Length: 305
Image (cartoon, rainbow, N blue to C red; front, side, top):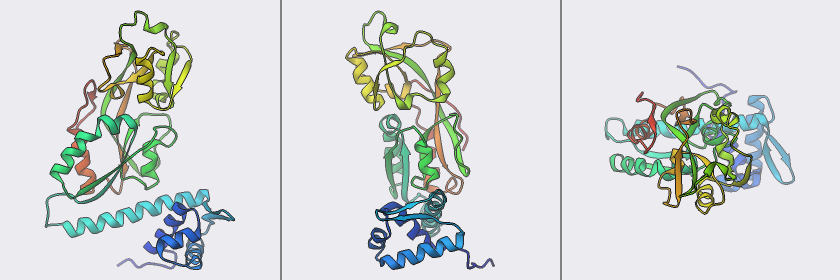
């Protein structure tokens, strides 16, 4: 039987690291954990000694993770989450056919609005013991997949195929492919002559080659925070936009949608989870419901388990 060594971090030490990172200081972490500041400081110093590097920068305003600390905290979150899943699944083995426990989901805005509601409705009906917790994350920078890598989400609804690879230890599977369309105020006779309305999440590397080849698309003169704001601006005649199908679900009658033709760009939407959580009951239950949901106007990418 494998034995722990003096260099192993205990679950308690992992919780301290995560709480210090979340609260921003040793005093606040101690208050959250019911410990003294000195006990928290002692635990962090012990973890740093075991790992062999400084995990937090101390200062007057609190404590901030170093690059090594950010990585350690991300792993700590994932280990603690796996321990909680282990307990839940072991207790439920042989007693209940349904998955149970919390399920943390990160999703970009249009997925949270138009994909997740029917998925979660069926998930709750079939697995009332699952407790979904949805967090909406902008699909820029580390995006939704970064939440899984950081240990703050179990599953991410993410755009796949970007130029930035996912972090090691993540598993990504495609769900559907959605086409982009030209969007403008209904009835406009020359929508391509309008100024461009855009938002940061729309500038994915999966469309960059197509975008660069279109000499009729001007630089964006209006930039909005999200696709909902883009639709509102377009519907009132402030410009045109190039938008993916999921963002156009339930678009009002004041919005006209024109097909961009056979060479139109597309984006792949899928789910991302960690390798250690991919086989758990709660994640597998969500994936089954995601695969059973096909939003209008998209193409299914596959049915792999």
